[in-house]
Image (cartoon, rainbow, N blue to C red; front, side):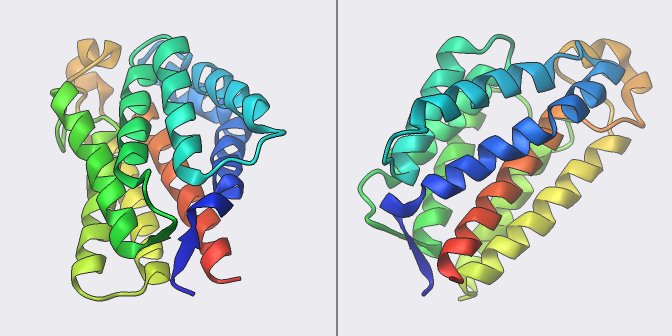
Length: 214
């Protein structure tokens, strides 16, 4: 099977939650080196609220992404709530009509999320933000779809690209957010948003892989 039933996507959503919950202290530690130090706490708050909301529900992958995005957008402070809210809600909108999600569908959803985010933020590749994780991951998925790879291989490519993108931020100088005040002194540290984005993308990949390789 090279697709996931949209209605069967709740375990993927819960993997995303677990990834943030299990790494909340690490995310705040990374953020604290050049930022406010609250990234892990804020993300954990939002994802834990979402987990409580869906615990007793049957919810599809796209409905869950929309609910998570809306919650983050409206209830989580700082820049990350609107950033992730925009991304997830746009992914959900692009895929809301899908009963099955295959590679082409997922590529459409991920690209919609990135495009919507780039419409509202000025950051681009090289600016030491989560764009440095999300855009390479999206590029890997788009390339896999064009070249006829399997959904499984595309998801593995996405993970590899996300991890490389995350790691690339260590050598960059921050251009946005509080860390941008440090200029060149922000080099040598990972960007917290890039780290959380990598965790989320890898959780999505692992969750979908469990569904399509079952």
